[in-house]
Image 1 (cartoon, one colour):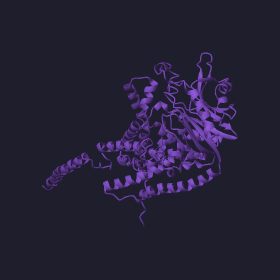
Image 2 (cartoon, helix red, strand yellow):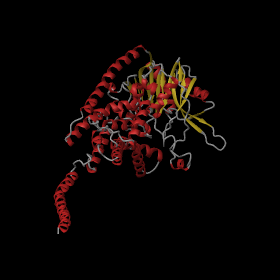
Image 3 (spheres, helix red, strand yellow):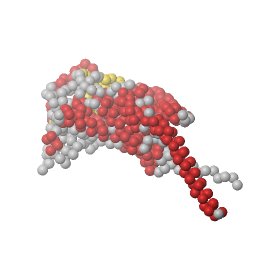
Image 4 (cartoon, one colour):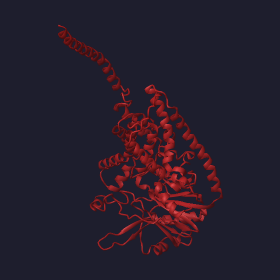
Length: 555
């Protein structure tokens, strides 16, 4: 009797436990439904991440604000807040979703900010508009991958326990360094019209300027996230977000005063820029126009040096005889030292094709050719077709695309005991390349020859001009830009515009520059800190953050 009762008691207890569990499960159902409904309405998920229906619109908003704050539209104060929606949207997301959010922000920014790509593709490819729109979307999808990379690195590192704010800053900086772009750009260029905020470029290039802008974005995002999550605000992030731009501004103010003193003591040079505004494919008037404008500038403005735009002379000269040919046909008529943009050709070898070089020539005061620089970074679709050497039929399909050969020499042009490093087209927006050129030649003047007519009367020339300004700050040298259709101008060693013209008009821009050079930290170490940052964020993306050991209880 006793044995039977003892066996029945556990079974009865188990039945009661099962009934209790069912009762509790029924009680939890309304709570689960309520939580699901809250998440569907836009509340945070249990991991603290926003649902997709909220996160993706925020990413789109960041991309659009990025576009509004960037050169071209130039509402530059937006750069202090443009990334906030993206940072809020990414918090707590999986690496895959963080990458998707970053890509959407990047794609939005490039499709709106680089709308001028459509005209370039139409002009040079000859393809129908619909096909050009498709190609533009593909290109912008690729360009947007820069922010997607930042998102993926951020998502990986945050998921492994590393603090979100510094991780985002590292990921953003590294994406600007390592992601290969057809049309490079940097977030720091947003403050090109606020020179005091650009001066840290002589310490860490455009990436450091961008991080100065990222800091207040992270601080404001921290405030918003803390309010949404009903958490304490991390005052450290807030303090850094306020202190970083303030310190950068103080450094900028002090550094600009120092640079102004150096400029005042430097040798002056009066420069004239010929902006011919020649059509891309109908340039019969180009040579006589440039010669006449140069003669007029020399006679009326009393200049020391004149600069022509990229390929201002619409014909090619033999590489073997260009010094004599250019002197006889052009430079002996000018009456002033001139940097001439033209094209040189090398005859085809056995079974090969002729080579063409996009070239800048230095004509001295007497017209004799003193030096030559060949463009090294060629523009895809304009000067060459990607995979065109492998598949020559591509050039038949795109007859307006060039087949140029890149140069190799970093030697500066020499004139009157001065060294002038020349950059052609978008070489002036490549910080690492310009640093290499400056390191090799130690010039006392930077000159850029450009033709932005390919992109039409759009924001592109102004974006190009804004991006180029940073080179003057990074190396504390004057930058002279001569463009066919604008924007031509002179930028001083603090990134301020001394003189500039407009777009799509024939004009001469005249202003004063200085022969000067200074040693800067960026000139010495370049992107070394950002390569270290790449290793750090890579390690964070792979390894979890070590957990703090619990204190050993006292005996």
